[in-house]
Amino acid sequence: MSKNVFAISLIFISIFFGTTMGTLMKLAQNDLNVYTAGFLRFFLGFLIVLPYILKTKFKVYQTPNLKIHLIRSSLNLPAMLLGFAALSLVPLEKISALHFIVPFIVTILAVVFLKEKIRYYRISALIIGFIGMLIILRPGIIDISIGIQMTLISSFIWAVVIIITKKLTKDDSSITILTYQYTFMTILSFFTVILFWQTPSLISFFYLLLAAISGTILHIALNHAYKLVDVSMTQPFSFVGLIIASLYGYFIFDEKPDLYTWIGALIIFVGVTLITIREIKLNKDLIKSKININS
Image 1 (cartoon, one colour):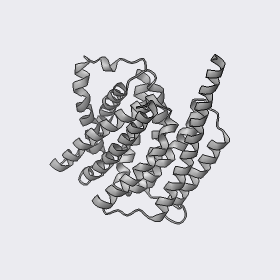
Image 2 (cartoon, rainbow, N blue to C red):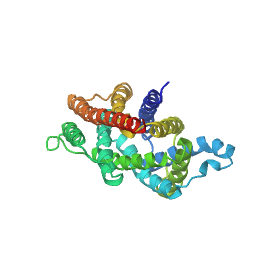
Image 3 (cartoon, rainbow, N blue to C red):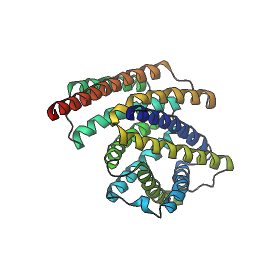
Image 4 (cartoon, rainbow, N blue to C red):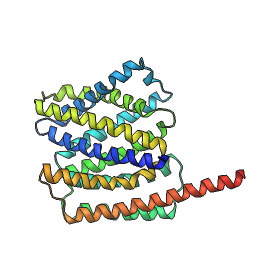
């Protein structure tokens, strides 16, 4: 199996378990506030990786990027809490569709922080993606609810986290990145949950345990995929998440996506695909030029 095919397989795995985690968090919040649900999600995730931490005698924590891990977790915490809170306010498929804006934010941030050049095809794709988001949101026609605002803010922060994650994969393994994420986010979320603690019911705790397992698989797969290939190559496959979210929403929550959501998501997908095709071609041309120089 080639590196690209393996990375794509990992992306599909991460999409499935990521959407499953979101569904389970939505179910858990039927009788829990977001602070309790978030803390237990992170703490249970930490307990899942704890045996590996002990097996390595804490060597999994060895990294030259301690401060970067702390910054990443400090950003990831509000991104995930906002995302979890939005789950109880916005239909699953709409959240999934709105998350398609992430690749475009990543492109802008890559220009600003990674000093990448923004070419005409990236500008075109960004415009297309913005049009798709406007179709989904329909500002002026429907109210931009607090849940949608939370989703958009969460998406922006998550895009920053992706940039940081990509940089971390150069030095750290997927499990090291995840271990620091669970460690720091458990500690950070503890300081909020002590003010808003709610004792979960048995069924909610079960949902959170399954969410922690799903989230662990999601992050290991995603981090490893980022280690193998460019982030831009992984983004178009996120469209599958809308299909999975729509199925979960329909069968579990009786949510029915409207036509505008599908049209907007499809337009955003086209924009993401434009970026990806050009990035892959650019990488191939770069490899060919290096081969010609060496020969």
